[in-house]
Length: 266
Image (cartoon, rainbow, N blue to C red; front, side):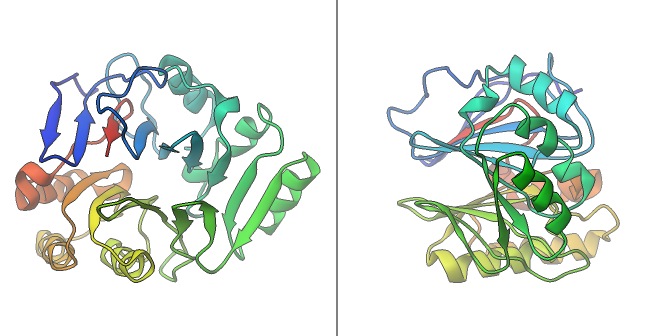
């Protein structure tokens, strides 16, 4: 279990609050363009539940998008309750890929909401899409980059050991990329996001699937991310403890720890 830490300020762009941030609390910035809450991860701050998987709540203006739903609804619901997040406030869901630790909470969430728009990667998701349609929801089968809401769009499904999509959030200064596991390669996903967003990557957050990668391989990826202009990085979930430590060493103050209860403003 990760202990609560102090507030950390990165330059003038990114604010990370370590510890539980209530979703109804007043933003620290006067008018942040983007707010992110980590609601499912392998690690958690005090008072929250950790489990293998990933989920991140994304808010731009009044629009709330849930990126991935973790492995199970009970853990996701507990963390959302503790963080003051009402499931019915979610407007849409984006699923990165079809592994159970990223879509496991979706059916439970769908029972709490009406008419959710859900963006599922093709072609693996047809059976789930049919179930969601029967429940009155609106699944979108995603192959190419697709707009979820103004300023928020998917990378499109990228090929890899597992086909996967990420979520891009366009901001004034650049963009944020959120990954589930980055099976196609986190550097490849950043490169694709740069082509689509036409700006600099302010923050790359999520699972990077590097638990079995060698130290040299991780360092090469870190160098490549720097070459792609990544300003700040926050790896979690399947990144692996060794790789996470190496990213911290390589990025220094531009590294942000990530766990359930972490909150970001940009």
